[in-house]
Every structure is written in C-alpha cells, then in structure tokens.
Image (cartoon, rainbow, N blue to C red; front, side, top):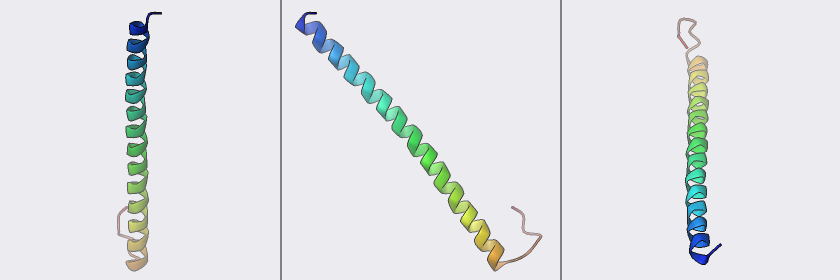
Length: 59
C-alpha cells in the first residue's frame, strides 16, 4: 500500500475504535446508573418499611 492509503486507513480505524469505545462506555454508564438507582430505591423502601412497618404501604 502507498503511504497515503495507509494513513487514511489508520485514521479510519482510529475513528471506528473511538466510536466503538464511546458506545461501550455509554452502555456501561447507563447500566451502572440504572443499577445504582435500583439499589438506592431498594434501600429507600427497606428503610421506609423499618421506620413505618405498615402493611398498607405499597411497593
């Protein structure tokens, strides 16, 4: 391959890897944020149950 083709290929590859990495990062951040929120809600609910042991309290 000529140098210009190699350079453009490398740029293309680097761009693709960057896009892929950002997608993976966004996915993991979303998953992490969702799991953190659920954990917080679970702790919240269990605390309410401990403070107010009321069977009519809806989950």
